[in-house]
Image (cartoon, rainbow, N blue to C red; front, side, top):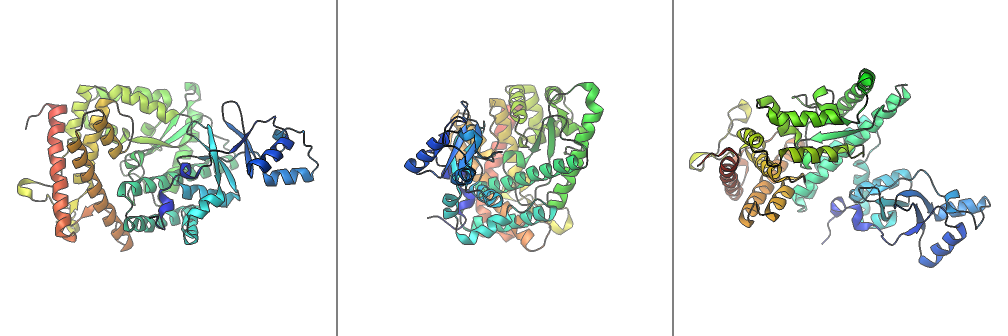
Length: 485
């Protein structure tokens, strides 16, 4: 049965009309009118031979143009609407609804990741799926491009996450949605900063670039209060232009990180941000850096790899992030020496110690007796699964996707897959519930959960999850570091 919040888990592809009316720039207006009438279409999309969208032609366009004496034998290119706003088929439906409402569109072309036209989204179809009472919530999640608007979006996120948990949406799907909302804030803040820089006379971007996020954002596993882990991949440019071009990107990085912080995505205390030149490089520099990292053995480099190996692009669509992902996957695959060094840093060890006792934290004093479900729960599991994924050359990002891929190619058997995925899902749910409670009660949002706050059954399930992580840790150390237990 569909729930009130069902729209937040649906993708644009679920509501795309694939029987859309497609036109060429040369199609005659008279033919368009005839086909709209006989085929019951209210809009047509103009595409080129490669299925790239060139324009859109709606009933309103035709009526308006006919009033201005457009001839029936004129090509539709003369009256089609430009520029074209399109939506990706993998975007969330709520995001498409809000965007169409803001722009006043009834129809929007839907495109695949490569820009190829796949169909059309009708606003009426989308709204029909959303209860009227949800439209305000949808609008709240896509507020105007201002810092106050972004801050309000962050506040709405928590209530939405709580609602979705109550209605039974899987926690990993909620994490994906939270990540999507945060990444949309990234895109909008960067666009806003670029527009401001142009208005101030700094000019447009002097080179193509992509903004990447790392860590949980790169895996699609955000909780309610992630900090910033970001960087820039910049297209190659001549060395003698570096001072001028890099100055532009420093300005952008400073604006972006400042506004993200104010909006509710706090600055990274480890300085893993595009304001740091280590995380702001040209494409060729990124390739060289990632080639050097596996040859180093110091803890700082391993820490950088730990952060960097989970990343995705959130702004810009030039293929730079995809290119770099393929490059580092090829470097790490089968690199036993490097993976062994990573293992010494990442081998899983949970919060369950000897004789089934919890390894509770002692500091800070106000959290004495609590468990850090990130550092001694989800993170050890995420890190161990990532090691196997790197060894096997698996590029996909989320922890559960990596587990499934490892199972499909035989590294994990069915029991491994079920135990580890269940452990991750349980701990992620406990952690998200705790963070929602912290936020709702005005407490600092942390990763700390007290065992006594859980039911006896939940504590037992948590112990089983920790046991699975500890057993997995033994396997990781055996396979990557040669340690025998």
